[in-house]
Length: 103
Image (cartoon, rainbow, N blue to C red; front, top):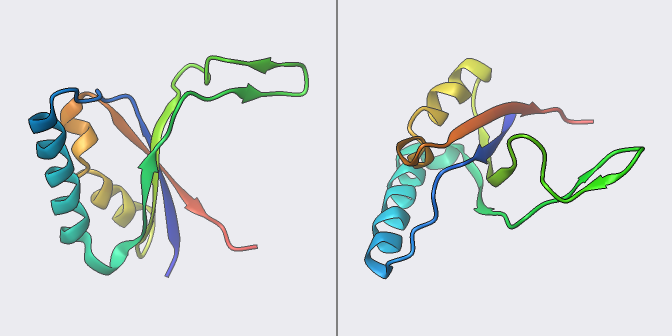
């Protein structure tokens, strides 16, 4: 079955312990709902650098990644359907979905 990379952009970081617990529970419920489709639940990411042939920028580009995950789905439309349940959407973020091509 094809694998799809979900790159999370935006969202907000919780600060209060009870808010962190609530958000983690939402992510856990989402992963549980997807079951075997979760290949690697991923992680949040820290500040990034954008590397090009000309230079290295410290800004992570116009829409820096805030996390990632790897999932299986029959096709990209099915993967998009999975992404529509992502908790980051409720936090004002978005999910970029791309097929991971086996080489």
